[in-house]
Length: 414
Ligand code: HAM
Image (cartoon, rainbow, N blue to C red; front, side):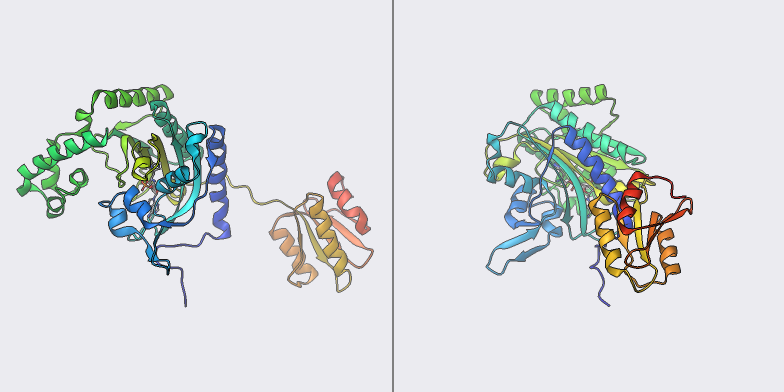
């Protein structure tokens, strides 16, 4: 039997209501703040991600679905949405629009990770990007918007971690300092950390082995090395979050899995999730546009995992779908009347369903009850229709032409 590929899942009809609720809240919250929706292709030139996300990242090193398009070009299923949004910004000359250009998306992304609860190979992200603004208020506003979205969906036990990475120059100097520090304590580090001292020393902060943790307690932190303007920017982000009443924990070693970040970085986690506790995260990426050969453009954004939000959200108020009318048939006759009546009902704005399974009348009424319809029209022939109101059980004989006006008036049938 052929099954869905490992790490993927079907979104079944019973799952869609919660996803639609999330989409509705995202549309409302981000739309009200002036974000407009964008959709980019599912696959892109591989180079977009190697350059944008970074050669040394796990995403580029191990997690991309890359293939040849048959004509010798290398394509990759998008592992994230920020680089594609920047590519689209450059390609469509969006620097000519009023800045910042505020965009949001709800799309599926692909990473070849080991599947587990909350971690899939195809997953959905809702994301927001504000391109063309360097202000601290842009970062703070983005964080507030994500916090509101998580709040609207009742995501439980949320924590926000906040840090700043400064500029690439500060970071590179700091990395040398950190590498030197790690080399000086090499014997106490785990093999994995030791192997990455030059490539990615920041990863040492993530290590769980006691030896490395001990060493990291005394390690220099980047937050102490920020230059004056980055430090002032970060202080302003913090002040605005405090003003907005958004609680956060300062995390001087917050490491995100993508290389494009500058200045602000943040991550929302939920203790209601297991090992994969990252609900959403992002930050500022002031140099990404140049890396993609676009105009120098500061930008900031975030993305949050739809499945993780829904896992951490618990029960959501989902109203059952309303069905105004079910058109049943008492026998062979009146098939076309029933068909026509259903169509007219929909044209009049009613949610109407036609019997399609050839059930007995008793079976049809049982089915109508199950889908919780308000009215059943039982077509007995060319001219006779019995309209039954399910709540009261009252019914009345009508001509086909009287059925829809009667429902629309909502008058009692008895
Ligand atoms: P990210 O942290 O790699 O950031 O992903 C954002 C969110 O996507 C994660 O917090 C998580 O909820 C969800 N996610 C990631 N991988 C998986 C997976 N394998 N299965 C299920 N959910 C997953 C980014 O992608 C950046 N583009 C965010 C950003 C936007 N930064 C600036 N702008």
